[in-house]
Length: 158
Image (cartoon, rainbow, N blue to C red; front, top):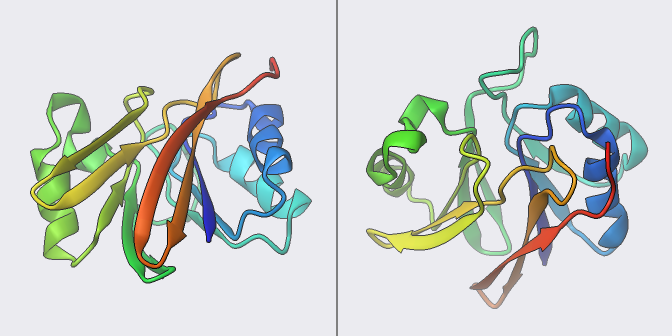
């Protein structure tokens, strides 16, 4: 199973669509907020791709939830933008929330910085920001409950 993770596109719809175009074999995508219109375009352009989405602190007028839980490929993903867990001040609250929900992985954005680390038995993964030239996004592969995390760079300008 291949899963794309996007966040903080801030209007860079072209970059979001580029990420999915580069991975036509993706089974699902997470959109972690701050670009709800970009997520709308993603769903419109790729209607068969399941998109799990949350709102970010810059998404106004959206009905997207603040967080979610999704079991994919035998792995439980907790996903949120990150501001509700003060991720700019540390990741302990996020790791605790994910662990309390039985998640194996916590996906988050908000900081615009790619990150992948283990904390208290939970993998924490931030794809970085898809909002800039040379922005980043994440690619997660799950096979036999084994998880591989990667960050990739976008090539297109706004």
